[in-house]
Image (cartoon, rainbow, N blue to C red):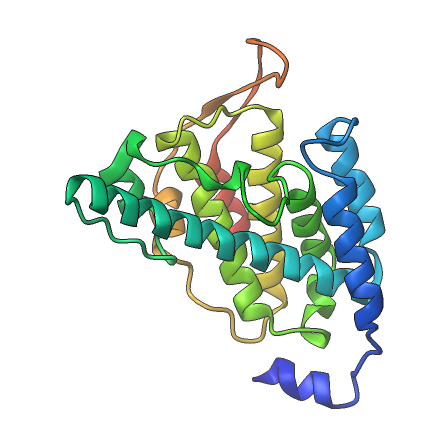
Length: 237
């Protein structure tokens, strides 16, 4: 609970809940799939909007909201499969990989169509980047433990989507994964008592597979990504 002692003690910061609501509303409605600019440009714009401590709080809320809604979506999908087929699927937030391995193509990757409207290649990577950039002061505005837990959840879902959910690994998808890994490492490094790495991440770190990364607008391979190697370099440093 060191974060709470710092929050209540001499390192207290002045936060503005009204400004946070305004930022959250603007980020939600101005950006995403309907915006007329490319995803990397949206990420840069949202990252600039979320500067300062209020922006850091909003970034944590975005990541939490996306992770919570993704979990609810997967629960609903599992319940629907059980209703239609009698097949029971277990949905564990700490490790989604067994669910995806068992259900395979029977599941829909949830991050493209969440009720919150945040897009995994626009607002989400921007929020994640803000959390990474503000990792050293994150404990001044919130508890970093659930934040890094949600970051790991989104990383688990991202890689599972590539492997089992028919999600194309393009440059936007690869950028999301890279930001999630980098931010997880930054937040863990700033914590006094970091939690253990979740099972899905430990499993992925034992692998050494390089995946082709495609141009978002065509079939051309532009580079590769090795999630396991990147996680080892970042999270075991």
